Image 1 (cartoon, rainbow over the protein chains, first blue to last red):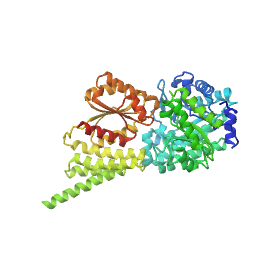
Image 2: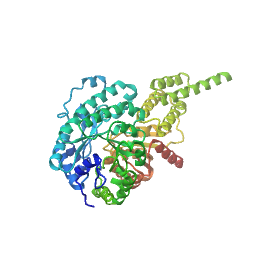
Image 3: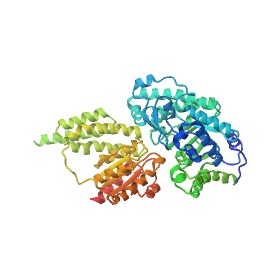
Length: 343
Length: 225
């Protein structure tokens, strides 16, 4: 079960369509990284040195094939003026949304993504990871996509109503969010990281296909286009159900599509020939609550369904690895990919 | 006389259909207008809620369950329903129907995601339950306090975050410590919750979605009465 390639060699070869020793495995280790160094979430989320150290330690602990830096989906919204609150040991939440009416949107100022809010924290974390382990593993940042940012600017409920009652305001929010997200993707790239997009609020569990197409897809496409211009592959993660929108996720131009609640066989039938799939061991039922054996069984089922996907396959968790996931369960997930490579 | 009565019945049917359609059509103004027409015509407000608004919400939940409506649509339908409800409420003649079990509902401490909770609340309300809504970020002790006050019934708790899930187990334990566990049926739900997790916490049921929550509550109600 000893790997023949470093994660960077493996991912590099994988994305270039060359042979690799085993399927890549990228559990979405996000806030869980804080637990690896015994740190509280509030410190992890607000201090780039801590966040960076947490991800370096998590990488050394688990050896996953991509570092995924992230703490919450409101971070771009915060940079644009939303006030968050930070519970001592939990992820932040929106306290005061930045945009209550159209005037608030008009008043939003130009934002320097290298200085605003906690965006510098993410950039600092990227630099720390790249400095310490960048020679052996790629470092990505999961950036909230424009629709999710619009929810952070307005609150999800207010944005949901806007989709019918104030469509111009919704589109305006998404436009502004897209511009800043493009800038920030560039900043992440310049810091040595790979920008990836996450859009949990645009999930098929929340929005109809029609709404997704009209409001969420444009922003995603815009940012993915920028990311691809930078020479990065474009990774898009949407959690919850995605059966109704998976073809649109592929239409966004993302090379890697990370999915949660959709059978991999179905995902593969729908977009497998034009996208690399990533997923989807169940985060709560299996990773948090299951045994290592249960993790292995589900990981193997994922590999059986998708390992030979024409567009490629990355073994992963369906969504964020829950903060309190037992480390041995993450080991079991990684080992499943290693065992598969020995077949 | 007979002719007049038929006319009144037809008007009632027409207005109830208008209420239902306005709710299903996310039409807040139309719902309010129809509610005022109900009052002006001297039609029973309670009947208008069960025969009009609830019927509309039933269509809405069918559409939600079959993937025609999603969260934004549910919210707008709910807005229309609540707006009409506000008009009708003051005109309801108090008549306790076959003692509906009270439902204490809330989002567990540490979580403020309440859209799902509000949908469940709405559906339960439309199904005739009396709701005590504690809102979001509700401390375990606040649930217990309210439970003591209410005496017996159903407690429905939700969360969207895996980090706040343990609060649900603590709530079940706290009800036991307070000696009132047997007076309440507890159901839990929300994004990261699973049936196996519900079992571990000692909750009585897991509601995978709003419709299931209503079905469970209705079954408990039936067993109760």
